[in-house]
Image (cartoon, rainbow, N blue to C red; front, side, top):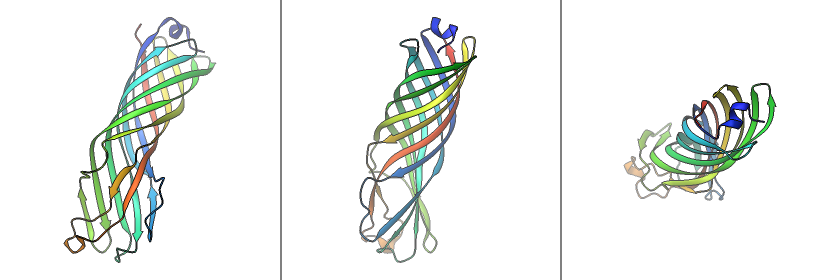
Length: 218
């Protein structure tokens, strides 16, 4: 259950930051003759949010996050005879999450909680890097990729209360519902202009750990 200071205060501000492990998944079949292996891409998240106590055990949170995520893809396709292509996507999003936090257990000044909700995110920047051992590498911007992502959030955490200030550590998982269209065409290679390369439709997902501070304000 919340501490005495929490039960007397309704509103709070919370700030945090931490590492991200992001990747992509696809709900669709790969093009014929194409094999894709997706790896994690490290990133970071910075968050600022406001919380409102709705009851003794439940708190609502509205946030503003700056998130770097993406993925590293190894692609083998029959239309590219020079071996594997390594494709790295990097996205920066401004994310607006709305979640509900439920406090379950209190052990002294520490409380354990879970939370869940939804988010909408707006792409601020991106980059796409193509690499092939024989043909080299190049980086360009993805101009046609979707600029808005929506998805769900879930996680858990622990909060250590020190009067009106709390230290919080949270694990966060999120998954997007929007298909991001990634054209794997290595446009910087003149000899391959006009050759059809696979277009892969991907969705964001990520794991993150945030360490932050919460201030009770009223």
